[in-house]
Image 1 (cartoon, rainbow, N blue to C red):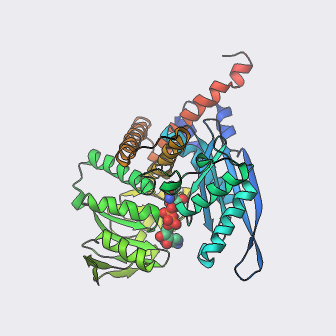
Image 2: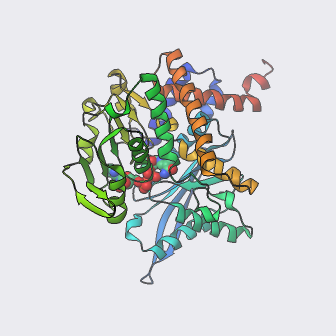
Image 3: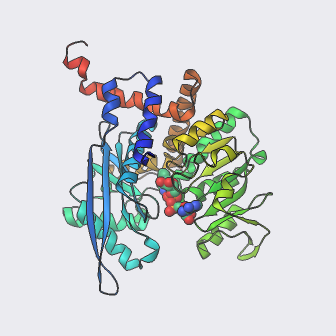
Amino acid sequence: MAKSLFEDAVARLDEAYKHAHIDKESLNRLKFTKSILEVSVPVRMDDGSLQIFTGYRVRHDDTRGPTKGGLRYHPNVDMDEVKALAFWMTFKCAVMGIPYGGAKGGISVDPKNLSRLELERLSRSFIEQIADFIGPDTDIPAPDVYTNARIMGWMMDEYSKISRCYTPAVITGKPIPLGGSLGRDDATGRGVFYCIEELRKKRNWDPKDIKVAIQGFGNAGKHVANLLHQAGYTIVAVSDSQGGIYREQGFDIPSLIHAKNSTRRVKAVYCEGSVCEAVDAQHITNEELLELPVDILIPAALENQITQKNAPNIKASVIVEAANGPVTSQADKILTEKNTLIIPDILANAGGVTVSYFEWAQNKNGYYWGEEEVHQKLQTIMAREFNNVYSFMENKACDMRTAAYGHALNRLDDAIRAQGTHEFFSGQQ
Ligand code: NAD
């Protein structure tokens, strides 16, 4: 029987355990989630009818601090997916050395079918249902797929009303006037970019020789495309849920972003001033994009995109996981045998949660930082942890995902041991 997403996620721990110096009790503890909540979310629709949606929030582990993780609005959201995403958050925060555990949540809904008012009522109603479960010192949500700063603003406002206290630190990814941080919007893409730049230094790449394909052109995909383009890399393909485009000479990314923002679809256009014209581009499917002859492939959409079926056809020598869980564990094995370097999600896309941590710290202090300061602090942490994971990989002769989990397991184990383990309580230590 095929493994569930959560089982597949947890299975990766056993390999990392072989390379980490941790207590077996710590490993077993991390295979379970701390607590789960499923709620019904009633919403009065614009036509007067009442519709009930299902929402979830999962806290995986809080040994290293309050739990942290996004809220996703997507028709495929279910408990298994949310548990896997919460598990990844625990390891992501540990990889980065930021003082949080992992959580995740979401609602099973297609937000494209809702009016703006329905979306607001849904978001406020969800917070009403989970208000006792979250809090600035217990569990702090953030945006994820198909949720954004505006939604975080509504949620913070609703929580503040319920708790009768202005509480910006309960949620991150908020609009700037409501306590958001400068530099949060592009933080995930920027973190992916900093990882690629660290790898470039190791491999002595000239950016203009490096061809990149990006699946998904939302928050994560758009920003990494823009930063790579500015640094001189050639972005030859991008896609969204409707399909993709390919152009061997590369695209002018600011023009693509302009087209996507105005038409909500990726289109190959070239803009000068406000005049845009279409340029030749080949239309491709999302499946074709993944198999293009490029140097770097960046999945930045959803999980389970690279499977044992298409892994043998992947030509990129480097995969950078901007999305969470885009490569299944079976595909991982095939790609590792082919010597494909995979910069894993728990490192590559951790820029978002890192700047969320900065936002929370600023909210708690009531003192706000400049954009350059945010970028610099993010770059310092991303470069430090990229190089920690890379050295772990070289020292243990393992793949980079195993190295990232091993590095995170060591940090989690330090915290679990400090609370006392079997050896301590049985007097062996
Ligand atoms: P988003 O909603 O802003 O964008 C998602 C993009 O994926 C859209 O362009 C959409 O059209 C596209 N898409 C959806 N289904 C697709 C499909 N089947 N094939 C190709 N493209 C498809 O979401 P986002 O915030 O950019 O998140 C993307 C991924 O990055 C998710 O896995 C998310 O968990 C991860 N992530 C996001 C953040 C963040 O701060 N936003 C942080 C860490 C990880």
